[in-house]
Image (cartoon, rainbow, N blue to C red; front, side, top):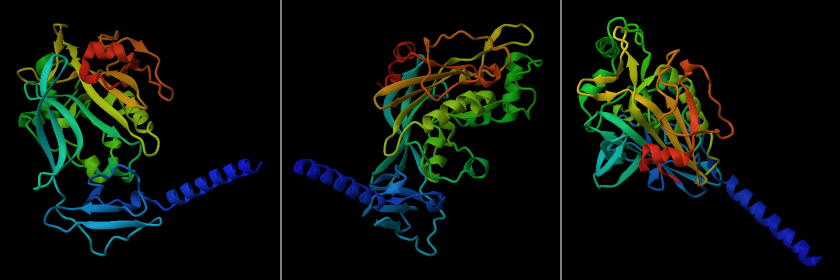
Length: 366
C-alpha cells in the first residue's frame, strides 16, 4: 500500500511541476505582433506561439539597426522598449539552390525563400520548384503549425501587393493584369468567349501555392506574396473548395507539432473556343508560358500519414472535364467536405500511392 501511495504522489508531483513549467512560458498573442520586424527565436523564424521560460524572442530589423531582444521570465515577456521601430525590414531573398526539380514532365529548379545575412547565414521560410522555361510554379513545400499571430484583419486591409523577386520573367507579372487576361482569353477563345467577360472581371486570380495563412507572423505571411508563388487560379476555386482544403490543413497540427505541405499543379487547362468549339490550352503568355493549371493539389504529411486533395481549376457551370485523370478518388479524412457545385471547382481526395504514381516522386512525402 505504501509503494502505491508513493507512486501516485510522484505522478502528481511530476504533473504539478510540468504544469508549473508550462505556465511559466510566455504565451504570444496578436498584441505582441509588429508588422515592421522579423520575429526570430533560436536562430530560426518564430515557429511557436509561445516563448519558453528563460528564452529570448528577437525582433530583427536589418543589419544597420540593433535588434530588440525580449526575454521570457516566469511567464512574463519583457516589454518592448519605448520608441523601438523599424522602417526598413530585412528583405526576403530568392536563393537558387542549383538543384533540379520536375513535375508533369516539365523541368525546373528549386528556389528557397530566405532571409539572408552578410555573414552567409540564412533562414528558409519555404521552397519552390519553378520552371523558367514555362514561367510557372510546379510545386512548393512548407511547414504549417496550425495557428498564426497576425490580426484577423490581415486579409482585408493589411495584405501586401505581390512582388517580383527571383529569376522569373517580368512579363509574367503583366500577364496577370486584368486587361492582359481579358485580351489573352479573347485571343485564345475568340471575342465571344464568356470565361472572362471584361477587363473588370476578376474571374482568374493569383492563387497561392504556399498559403499565407499557414505562416505565423506578419513578416512570414508577407513573404508568400510573390509572383513566384502564384498560379492562374479560377476565382471559384480560390474562395471555395480550394479554400476548404487550406482551412482544413491549417487546423490539423496540434500545439508544438507541424504538418509538411506540398502544393502543386498538374497538366494545362483546356477551354472551348467560342466559335470553332475546339478545346484550346490556356497559357497567359505566348510561347506556352504561364499556363493555367488543369489540376491544383496539396499533399499533407502529419503524424507520418499523408493525405492528398485535388481541385479541378475550372469554375464554369459545365466544366469539360469531370472524370479524374490524376488519381484514384478515395474517402476524405474527417473534418473536410466539398461543395458539389461546379462553380466551387470540383474537388476530391486521392489515394496517396496512386497519386504519387500518376504525378511523380516529388509528391512522395510518406
